[in-house]
Amino acid sequence: MRRLRNVKIVATLGPASSDYETIRALFEAGADVFRLNMSHGNHDTHRANHGIIRRIEAETGRPIAILADLQGPKLRVGVFAYGEADLSDGAAFRFDLDPAEGGEDRVCLPHPEIFAALEPGSSLLVNDGKIRMTVNDCGPDFANCTVTTGGTISNRKGVNVPDVVLPLAALSDKDRADLEFACEMGVDWLALSFVQRPEDVIEARDLARGRAAILSKIEKPAAVRAYAEILEVSDGIMVARGDLGVELPVHSVPPIQKRLVRGARAAAKPVIVATQMLESMIESPMPTRAEVSDVATAIYEGADAVMLSAESAAGRYPVEAVTTMDSVAQSVESDPTYREVIEASRRANRQTVADAIVSAAREIAETTNISAICCYSQSGKTISLVARERPRVPIIALSPLPETLRRQSLTWGVHAVLCEDVSRFKMAVVNAARAAREFGFAEKTDLIVVTAGVPFNVPGTTNILRVAPCDERLIFRSEPE
Image (cartoon, rainbow, N blue to C red; front, top):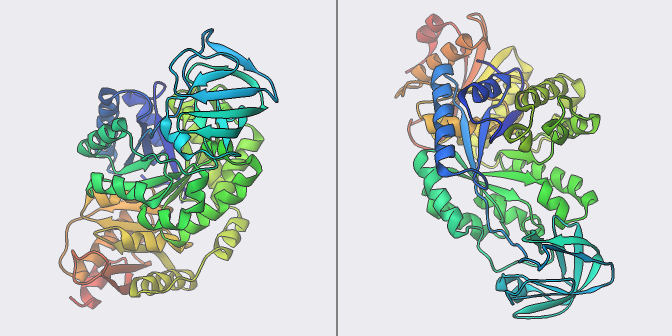
């Protein structure tokens, strides 16, 4: 099965999409990656969905990536005597550690780590930022605030603290258990919530022990400020615009999104743009024009993937949402302006032999009659470098390792093909020619570019580029051993 677009689609599974028929329909509609949201459901549900995805993968012969999204610490207020309280603008309100039921003047905030980090002038946001407060004075067990934006506050609503770095690890006890479960089950990516500093990512990587790649969700102002350091230790990035829009002014999110996408692309690491992309399709079979434009903007920016959350997990039209996203992507990528924008944002990054090889592969492909760039890779690094170039021709990723191909299913433009292990470059070229023909990327009379590293089975050794015919007889006649 060959997709007619380069950007990938991530579909979240949930109550509306937890059976074989629906998951198969989502895949056929265009989903490349399936997200298991560990904030909802239980291990039995996620294990069942994992099994369905792997069954579909076996039936279709197409590597499919599975992403487990860890919940992260949840900061919530306590309970109120009457279930809720109305707060007026300008009113005084106190948070403390007293577990007694709250009222119109106070409530328990059972998180001493928040009080430890607060300073006078800090902001506290409740219920996705609908209620906003400014801290007047604070101590190790209290914060006296002024309500700047009032409203109804109710039991166990979430709290955001945008101005400070909280002394909290990104992984709660639940997250650690979920991480181990997901890795043992065999997911390909772990999405890490509540990232504030690179050390959060390093901790998750140590726990994963190479069993899954680590994708950092950028959803807090502290993560935006430390983005370069977080990106360096991450395998991928998710632009989690929902939480960013709560903790930062909403008008600042679009330029931040653009910077995050460009940074990840320059580092040759996949980046997902997520949250509320087709939100209205939870209830409607048709998206709004603004939502379509939002998806298109992410694609024009060069994102590797766009993601559906509640639209596919709990909405009434999960398959239609994927179909819509697929149609938008194909429309954008067929626009000549798309290529102009993508190529104008390409950065020259040629610090290593591998950088030079993949850059040359793209230039050869775009200046001569080349049908595809074929990358033979063990670790997937070469594939990511080729994708960073955003070439005009298809990228065929070949590897004998299913886990490498599954992870690369999140990467822009990659068509993953499982092939036999080889010890000679000639056979890598033969495999590439066969794959190009089998999946309709080339005919026997066409030429392809093949990149690989010699000696084989040594990650990070990309050092060879060959322009080769798709006719195997010519390969055996002309290629060296």
